[in-house]
Image 1 (cartoon, rainbow, N blue to C red):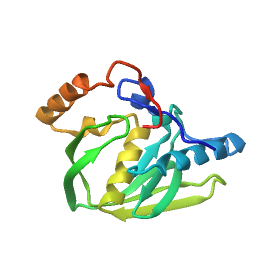
Image 2: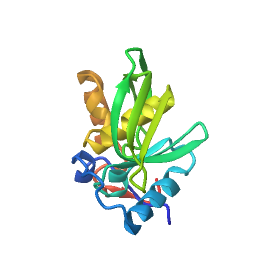
Image 3: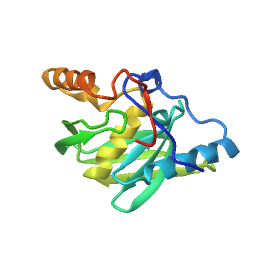
Length: 172
């Protein structure tokens, strides 16, 4: 299909819980292709449907040569072992902050044929699965930061060139 414009912090679609996918039709297949085309751009690990303005529970991933998508994902397993490293977001461009996540994660959902799928991984893949599922729940990684770091992050957002101009950006 095509690479879609991204939505920026401040767009209400990013903080609204997404609706479950209930129609498995041609328009859903087009959305999946758009998610895959858009996440294939260099430097992208994951992309949730709200980031392209669609309030449905769908995301794509592009981690370590693995490219795919999950519809109606739910995190079903998180390891007790933690990772605390830099995290960034296409909808909060140019910024990154240490964000604690589980080292290992498992997500279950369905594909475009409404057949079960499961995606799991460690490190960056685990971070991606958690980050993108958060998006579908109306949560940004900034919401997971400790109070002081979040205050600093929001200050940097307000000072950024893109904040308040338009919540959409051409192809990130």
